[in-house]
Length: 405
Image 1 (cartoon, helix red, strand yellow):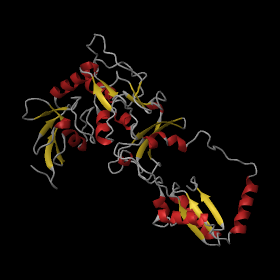
Image 2 (tube, rainbow, N blue to C red):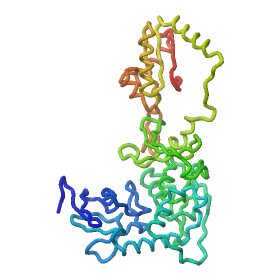
Image 3 (cartoon, rainbow, N blue to C red):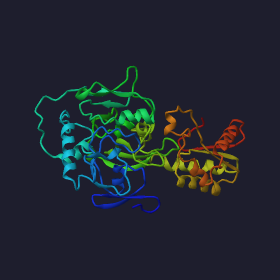
Image 4 (tube, rainbow, N blue to C red):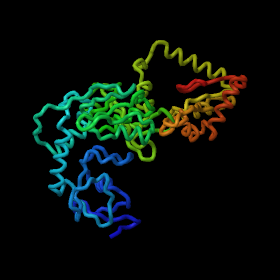
């Protein structure tokens, strides 16, 4: 029986769930708070059906189906591992098969602690291996590109990384070669994994096969503190998760946001974060001559406050800082004041356009809101630069981290 607003009604483990037509079983279950384990499926990539971990039982069908490639139908009755012994046994067998050649690297693997293979083993398998033959050995610590390392033995061949490079960046650097248990992920001849979003494949990897070259062996995940953040690299404003230990960044991951960056993050935003917190930054108060310096600055401002001034402000500042700057000049500057907010653009390749904005500056809109910039920020910035070149202003202020470009 159909539900309201064009939704269809299905049953998952005895619970009635209303979902949109065209939804697959994994997403339908997720909307009801039910997790169906999976490795290869990702909501923003094509369906591969490689891992067979998402098996489900459907009433009236003779065999188990995979949830990633099964579209719900009105009235469908589905049983997951929570209520079906048949499904539990199938998932345990799949895990046992995946683990046959998987190395016992958990003690040294960067993914340990947030690894789906670990989590699912304890949840759906949790038994000793019956495989006593020699494991198949593969290449380890392979540099796929400037940012990503591959451990072939840990790879479970979910092919998320391949599909990401084929379907999202469309750069197609990666492929699977050989057959059977000798299959490995590699780059094609003459290619490197160096597209502008290459680090995203590490986020997509459900195990520890792909790691960040920059952050290998930095810290165990349970020793870190996690915080939600927004990338300041451009005006896209990608949502991120930043992991730190001892006040040092040890990992940056994309935070899923369907309307902004989904689960993607560009390499500049991921690996460039440390430039914002350099080692040599000032960490204390400088006392020597402080009062004298403030007195000199105050004196200079008073002497020149009758002159015309242009104030070039960084568009990386906060709303509160824009507000303080505006209030300061309105209260203490008697001459005419022209505000300009830095605005820089850049040329982007087709791959970069997937996520990166041509506008470097993340908060020029905030400057407009606070009244220190005109709506047409680009034109007003150019006018200010032309005025500076023509010496139309008697006083010039730079506020923030940007100089004139």
